[in-house]
Length: 435
Image (cartoon, rainbow, N blue to C red; front, top):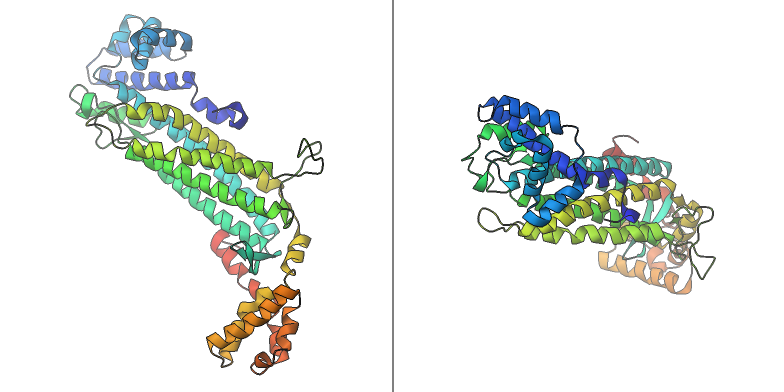
């Protein structure tokens, strides 16, 4: 997590002061419920809130204590006692460290997901605007990187919109999966703390009680959460890769906005490189790289161990901060993307109409030729067009086997570009609910 790829709102979720504030709230809410149940004095619970509610916790002091205790939660509780006084002895009654740590992580991941969902919403809005802008802008579709059949640039963006709409749904599901609370004590049996405390704290912190914890919240939840972030990152990379390909000099159908004063190369002043989308490709790799450790965290020993702890202290902040930055950067790329319809037309016409080969193939089969013969007729004219830079329609008209089945007028009709776009409105309606 470095400033270059970080945004303040997401970073703030993972700051030590934020973490200690959440720790305090969990402990104080639990003490409130314990006071209501008669386990601790109500006056003590009130004092804890009054003395520490607005406190700024001394991170350096907590670190100093931890260097002796070798235990972060105990270090915090010791510092809290320095603030609260004698009533602090009623804090953490019947609880274990994981109750605080796991519930805090749930709060942080839930808050982080709220930001990520808002990021996706902003990206969807940008994609939608550009999709409608270029709904009927013709461009060549490619399979294996080779010209296939025409699409529109709007359809390319509609596909991206649908994909990120699914990402949004996955993030919502991941948030629900991760937003659980465990205040169940050592090995999760509630032996020393009433389950009502867990329910109360969960409600106060915007979580749901974990149905059954051991001494930790089950890590399959976290594995699913980080796997979801990995999928979203892959969707970021897919769109970024498409833009990178479209910006290649030989294609040049779209490119990242190049701002005044921007420099593309220290050596070659003419360069306009796709640096933002290349950066997004790298960031996506980082987020995906954090998925496997999360999966490996699922298999903890018995009721708990802490092999997951070091992993989560790193991937929690890094994955969410990195993906937040990536989504915001991609939104900016899409919003300012330079799009060149004239180059799309130039590339569409580059192969002399070969993108109509399937339509001719189908027409020949419908005219009575076998599929094998139809394919052979179309392919030999296509290869001649490809290899000699000729016109596909002209070659078809000169082929007696083809004209024996299809008239010149029928052949010409098959080169109507609008044929390929007759269902664009249907697709847009499915994706956006409107055309």
